[in-house]
Length: 275
Image 1: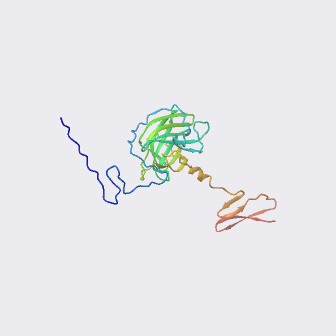
Image 2: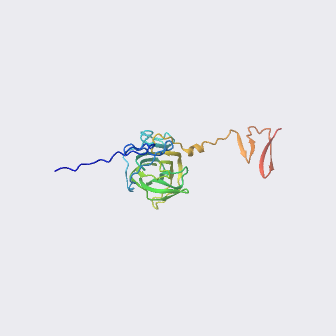
Image 3: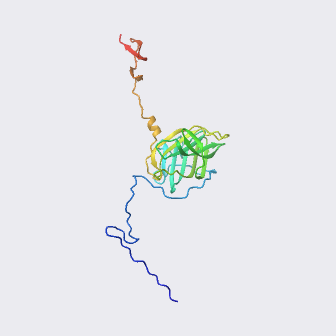
């Protein structure tokens, strides 16, 4: 039996000026340049929802922060494996838009982590809620909108949790939202609130951390808590009080001072008269 002979297609050479010769030396006509520290989301199947909570056997810590997982904390040095009160969120990429999360903090009701695709929290943003229910963790998916949490099924599974007094720790895997730019940059939020285990109602969230926009897939990204930065940015000069634009010096000796009060343009103003 004589086998059929195979004839290969001739080498294809393009017109002069084109750097393409055959299939093995194809040069794209244009290239796409991404912004620095931006990771493009690759395609991966979304996680199948299953929010059954198993007992978390290990303690969450910041041991792999900066090398294997991105970490956000208030204070920034927060280590949930030690004593003390602090808030902590860690994220580690599995593939595509799928990430492993670890959330820890103190609350009498619930502890929540929010991901926003813009610079603000509260525009129907994806939120993961770990609540105390009869001494154990109960998990909810929710959307944060205008200061309210509305329960919503999210692509989350592998949920584990533990409660020690007021300390809540939980881990889970989730498919994060896809932004318009198809990147993994988010503003992160950690919040606490009340939880009614009978009705299942979630109280208004109290923000403990709101980060700058960070790349979840970059473990070494710098995370800043803009809540604490804002609250600590305003300082007052000593012995100075401001009242409707008037400067009022502090009175340290009233033994020889005579105080009077006068009005100008409907504003009260104090004046110190020398003896």
